[in-house]
Length: 392
Image (cartoon, rainbow, N blue to C red; front, side):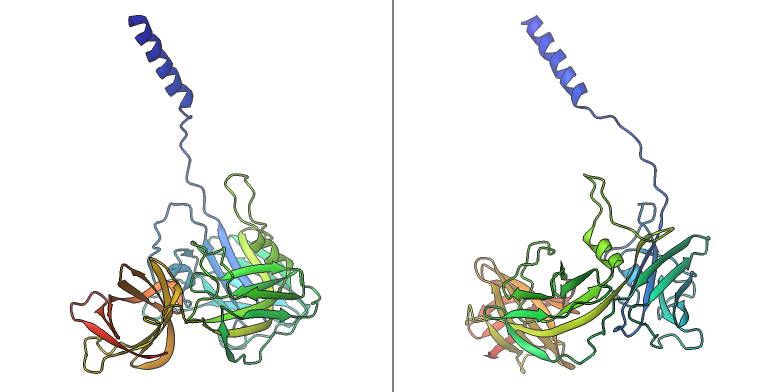
């Protein structure tokens, strides 16, 4: 027995030693300059984003509400200010001025540079030519130089105002057909969604999206088309830089990384031209008429604080729990804004969104349904907020 115990102890010790990996201290890697710029002849303005790669040496906040005027800071990045940014093309040199952030101190930087001709004020549309080559040059305050080139595909942007059309995701599909484009490496189909955009590259000149399509970019494979939301679907002709950058990714297991065509830094300098688009007002067939429909704030109940005027609720995914979606309006605006939620054991939670993004919640209403009334609280307030059903 004494010998057996000794043998067992030795075996256990050997197993522990055999399973123990070598320990190694990994030094903090030096940050790199990251540049992101896509020339788009149909855009209101052209911009260049300049930031530092994240190494863990600097603490960044990822809990801010996203601000398109300050995309790097509000997106959890590290902007680089005071850069010299220029893009040279057939019509001369475009210079980049760093955008300001209202209410911020003078030394606050956004890392967002708006391109313009030197003789024109910032914000003036710049001339971009189809089929022309453009060269980017970024010089940071510490002397790092990043360069790149791109050629804009020979396509004319779809600038016509696209009306909003109703789209029943239970019965409808979205179909696009277009002509071949000189200089286009591929075509990008993009569908905006509250759970993140759905992206698809294709070499074809036509594509059809079914209404029940799932978004494999979303964390829980949510549907692409969500009832109650107004969603943009578009097709763009893209250059080789754009195609290679977005079709690749960093893979920690294989060591394969993104295809980077910039010199002196990481990122993208590419071109994309929107050639077709649709604006969809997404609806669906009724699934649960008891809760689905338009609900308006009870005029005798002022606890809503004059904020939310009405809801339109859909049962996006039936069952227990059920996923809800829809839109809401405010008293001071008739514009529809997106909403998602759940119903679990009769308890209803509705998240009121900003910019139709499920990652940006403005307020939360929670409560229960009592016949033709929704009774609950808004934003955790103690006072009840009552909504009464008014129809479909």
